[in-house]
Length: 162
Image 1 (cartoon, helix red, strand yellow):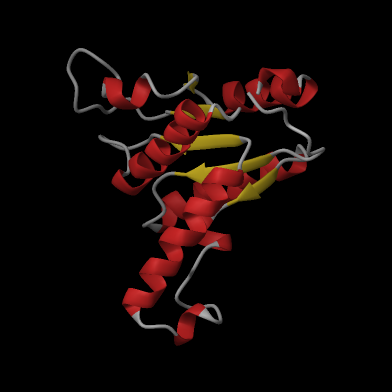
Image 2 (image 1 turned 180 degrees about the vertical axis):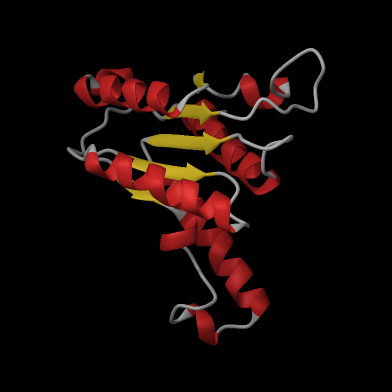
């Protein structure tokens, strides 16, 4: 596996970002991660938003294509993939993003931490918290924000974990 040579770890932030509460949660957690010295790509802030140039001048189809390519490239360059799993079922776009991150790590043997955060007790599966195609692709699922932040502090101290 390739070694991490960057001094600042890069994190891709995947999860629901449709409503105001989700976006606010993402922004607050993102701020905490950045205060720890992690470089975060938050799609709702850093991605191909329709209200920002040059994306606001593109057609919907052009913007969707750019969004996919930009997010894919950010996933591939990230050292850490964070998946916010809240909701009865995880966000379907973030599930695809997890597949990209896991596929890269598995097929290209590239080091990358895949971590989930699930603070929501609702579930679609009676016998399990998550679909095994999601839970088994993740290295760790944290059940509280504090647990996630503590885990990432360990990663920052010992990048050999990646």
